[in-house]
Length: 428
Ligand code: SF4
Image (cartoon, rainbow, N blue to C red; front, side, top):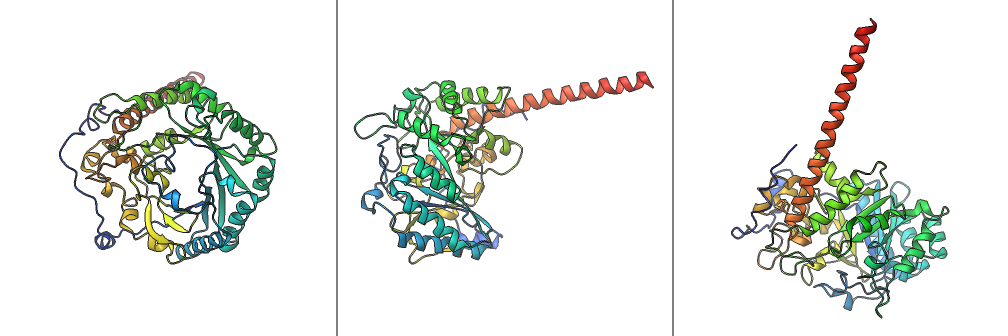
């Protein structure tokens, strides 16, 4: 499984990439069919009680939130629920995921949260399992919400960037106060025995100034079932902090490698780190279940507070309007969304990669990274990720570590077989 880590990712300064505009008719003639949406994100509240300076909602190119209503109304919720149910029937789906998101979804209040979950479950009916989740900053996570989530079987993901110093670098209130203390309180309530089963995991945005191992250990101290590490959003035009696009250095790859080594070599598996687990799955030829790596079709769609249908939020980091579809739940079904070129592009895997990525030896694992991170004015998304070298470094490291451990296991198993075979001979 050894690969040449010196090739592929280094070739980033070549000529212009071909543009990627999917020809839907040609794709259909080739037998391609859209993959139905299975994850429905409802933005039930468009504002936040924190003012994190890296937030793609408020601090990045797309400022669409300014013109949107604060809260989703019950009428919009019911219409969205009916559209979700219609989509499950059209595609014979028996399971979907509903994610309540924001802004900060808990600002919508318990009644609206209840309305969203019950409306979608009622519309879908008993034949469709609706796995409901909420993604919160944790500040408002009190007993009222936790009792409600228990009653409705809603799982809770919390954003935490590590220890107090690391978390409060970015995740602050508008007046500059850090939020780590409040989030820690919310997490202690969530992880108490009565509610622990609701805990879906932690989401941590990487800051290179934070020590990677200390950050990981601060996260696992809450015993999350899953940790998601997010690369800060950025593009070739607006590179992420510390990532100069033309630089051979791999600061984010190096940071993640340190976390991987701490996670992988620990005698006890303390948690699942989604990015690492998914890379390992991909190395064994299995499909990814995350947008961050691999070539699996994207199956997520977003409904904003006003009923507008959008693509994944992370696209907002690219340019103003990047996530927009121009469609609305009052007029359009989710099947129509599946035919948009911008959505088709994110469902056709390798065919939507840049020429550079297609020639890269690890493209089936990397998948060109997160779609938004490929953006460059002029060539759009037909580029490698702005994190290309970091992804190459991380994936190569994981591949080497997994290969080495597999070899060791095989050698140990062979020795055991030989030893037990000799024993049989000696006693016969
Ligand atoms: S973004 Fe990923 S697939 Fe594309 S060239 Fe870089 S490492 Fe390879």
